[in-house]
Image (tube, rainbow, N blue to C red; front, side, top):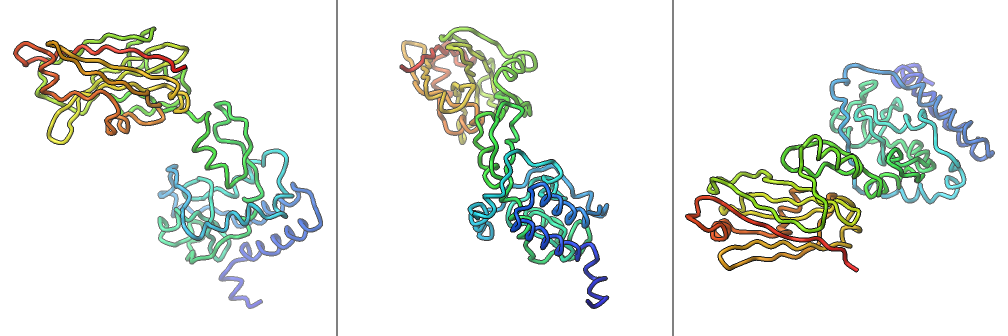
Length: 350
């Protein structure tokens, strides 16, 4: 081989292909799974060297797997009979998972996985962020796919990342991401809408969090009767007025009441959210009633799961909506002070 080619590509890059060849031969000869993985580790570790030039662009921000035509051949990899036979019974070691970790965003890589001429890999989401330069050796990336690593990924099975929350499933590498987006054990976001709270956890944790950290009122029972008062109803801010948590039927519900701007008109809205998943929320119904001066408005609906954000529910107008003029009419008096009484109940469908 010409010396200039060796110096240009590097001895570490040349070492990759003989080891991958040995890997394929060992696969045909039914060599052990750990033996084959060790060969891959040697191949990829031989090329791993840090470069501080790109350290400042590394981030923990998650990058969604690209949805393009290049990724359509993943099903061929997953359904490959040769690879199916190679799937291990247990989970893979952390060192193997590191091979599939993007050196820039540190997230798992999905097809198309790119590599430079020296064999260093990077995910397609980070490729434009490094201006098409390898973050390890700074060579131009081009459009080289690392098909060997993509095939290795197709043969792996990994535990759900929400294992710590109770999920015990083991999933093929390319199916794991879809499962995690729908996993019943994935944590919930804090339902408090008065601040950008980043707390996450299961329902018991969030109930304690709302009570201790947000000082939310907690009530037992399936009926409620609340009075909302505002001294200057002409001022409308996009902020939650009140959040109350109700415990009934062995579940928890969040009652929201707030003012927000709908176009040029200020309105008030009240709605209920269920602290659980949507399939469970559909087992319950609720009604809200507001009125005064011999008139009243009634709303009946199904509580929305806290999987749907507070803003999503509010902006879909899925609740009791009261125009400001109507709210002031219900308040009576000289209409200079808002006094609304909202009553309601929650029941379980049979």
